[in-house]
Length: 180
Image (cartoon, helix red, strand yellow):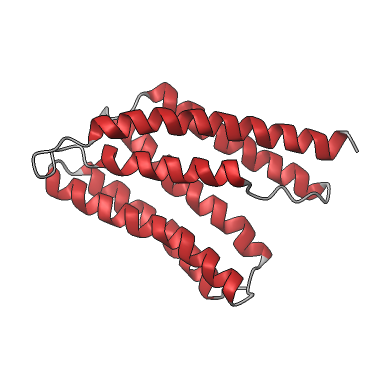
């Protein structure tokens, strides 16, 4: 049950408090450290999936923990951004609500014997969210370049994909659960 892939997923979950704590401290050094920790944690999302598929150790626990770890990491950082004034609260609320709705749908689908697996839009959503978070996290100029305006633009692109993929999950669930 706690194979290597699942342990890596748990590591991502345990990295979340480190990233949030680093964001509490002001200054470019702490932002860079937080970004490095976030990037490392985000890379583990790819690594755990690769290992699970390659070694054929995909488990039900892993299928549950992997998206949960993503949500914990991304949502925690976005909520911290609201606290810091780096992201609009309404954007973060929409993203967090979408994550809660999709998690609930997956639970309902599972109870009905339906596997509501991550699709290409959900994966694109995750990549866009990660891509937006990094430049937002680097909230001070890096080598004289302000990256957070790019992060703000990417956050709105990620928001659009987040809403689209959420609607797509709802549509998929409805078609599979009620239009049989």
